[in-house]
Image (tube, rainbow, N blue to C red; front, side, top):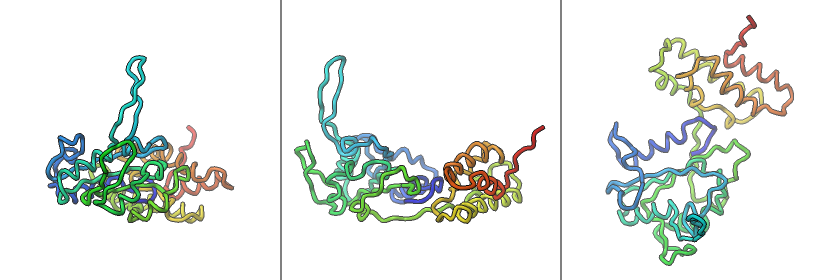
Length: 273
């Protein structure tokens, strides 16, 4: 699931878990969260990890890890979260879904983290050898992997082409109409809420037209949900304006662009006194 920040990619991934595990409405999804092999429910399980630049193969699959006890340094063989998860899925059986979510999947060095799993991802059920472990490793058919990524942030690692081929890519774009439901509990008159949604859409349209950027640089609805705890002006000054400054930093006429964005959003700087 990929797209601009704040579009609800992680939320949609959790909704997919509910569907795959056939969880009843209103149930606590955390009851099915993977903890230990011994605690897995027969209906299946799920877990979530967030990648970052220091995430390693040893964290994901397993390997030799240092262990400092007092002044004594020793080394132990530890299983990574994905290996433990797949081993549990194999024990439960193919008809029980095990859903593994990788949030911010492109923040880690993917080639290093996945290693020889590139083969195992494509050829499910076939065993492979992994370093330091004597037993063979298999990614079972009942393991589903869902990644979320924000491809706009240029500080992130590019998605390895060989790994990209193993995934389907589904674009998640901003949908401001969800604010009607998600802000319904707030004390906002219906006509004011409609006007607010229009302003949110206008701001995204201004981003595309003023900066001559593609639709990936829009702002997701999650940013505007902060209206639950902030007023209209605070949301602009504390969250939206700093984000937009990052977009226009170093561009010609930065100040003019920010003024036009504020106008599109409907923010008016309070007059002194």
